[in-house]
Length: 327
Image (cartoon, rainbow, N blue to C red; front, top):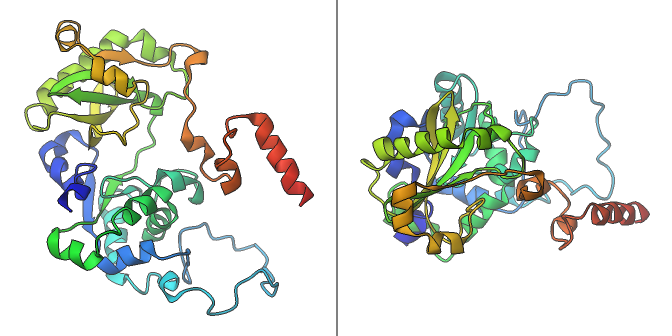
């Protein structure tokens, strides 16, 4: 069972060692009944929910139509709200307001509900209250898939065996340039690869400053990460702000990872001697034709379209919309 809680590395495992080089964060242990709520079907927002903007001029909607569920039709498990977790909501709101200047970025263990950002009124991962945090967690397939993968174990067994098995990770929110994010690959204790974190756009400065970035990241790894973090095979994500690297995340090097501009064949076949002599391999988008399509851009599309094999094709999207209009 313990293996399931090491993929990715628990935040409380690596953050204390590297805290001075990370974005400010706070860990909140999650009770078992909250995990049960996340696993329950449906999304129910209680009265006075602050996940959305308050549109005071919007006219009331006639909910008498047959498509609306009857009162009490929702499962009891789906109707839990802030009333079910008052202490947890209070703690989250206190952390956001007092520690993070009113803005945070949430994760559950090492998993980020980034696929649900379209549900947030801002379209980003920025959260200013507990309602937004919970909405993202509850709406995310990433979080749902992670939790359901653990269903082979009973929650009671998990909580009795693993200390603090589920933790909400709140990080101070910054509006950062994704062009300055890098995914760095470590194999057998050596930094072997550096990739543009989001290869869906061409950033000329990444090519123009290749030597500088390789030098900065290599020095940061050697001086900051390698002496403290003793794992041999992992990836770490960095954000470089005004020549200052910041750790965003660390995960084990395994088959579930997105290696960005590298493939597993690249990783398996890299020559250790060559890496030692020439430094890590550096890969960024260097022309428009080498841009890699990002799955993030299809989040929020209809289920039928997301599962269409041709969803990269604009013509297929137009055809889908035409068929929807004819229905």
